[in-house]
Length: 293
Ligand code: SF4
Image (cartoon, rainbow, N blue to C red; front, side, top):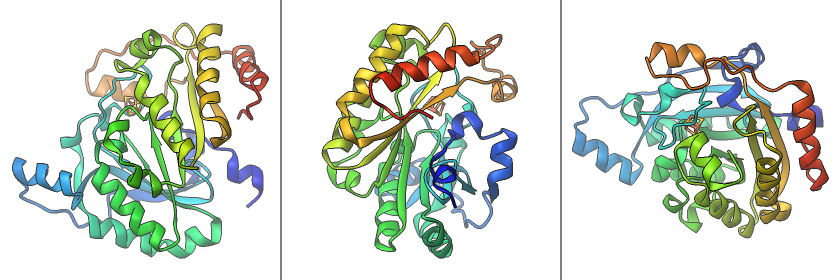
């Protein structure tokens, strides 16, 4: 696999349903997991705390999308944010996910171990928000690392407080969504607060982890010159941990899900950025010394 193939990535939230993603996806769904049945609310809460069970929306094996090499990407269910541009609102509620045993997930990683080794790939937890299920994710990561398998988390970092330093130790790479550069814009975009993302990025950097920053460009929402400058300034705080920044142009592939779930969709008429706007924003990041994809 060429270096370009290996490092030119796209964001699952944005491209999960695109033709490119479909052609890169080798297999997936929820097949191959034995699911516990008859869990009551108390069992669920206990299993969540211990990480014996994780609530999973879906998984797949793909190439060059969610980290280097061929990867098993597991989309966890549950997310505390409500991004206006979310492509997967069907992952928002944890209870809509399928409970999966920790052992079943670890076995699945083991099954593809040779493929991961041969391609420089590994396991990626995405979502939803994987940091909502810290015990499950970190126990799978620990087992993967013991097998020599590369680990990656795709997160907003909003639940920074959920991860201990020990848990961070088992992350090789973080795909960190910096959704905006100031608190007010961040809140408008996501309904949440920006500070935890910055704190999580700084902790990753301190612990010597690699970060691929992701920034979704939406005209009229995240594209102002000041907002992009502020995102760049945040990335500078992560210093050399940032290997590159993905500037992801908004698209409408997620719209049918909002309609299906009957959730009012704030970006109904959004057309996405022009090539000129994408160029301007990429150049802004480049001026700060970042490699931009
Ligand atoms: S962080 Fe935002 S984009 Fe990602 S799943 Fe949650 S709401 Fe959707």
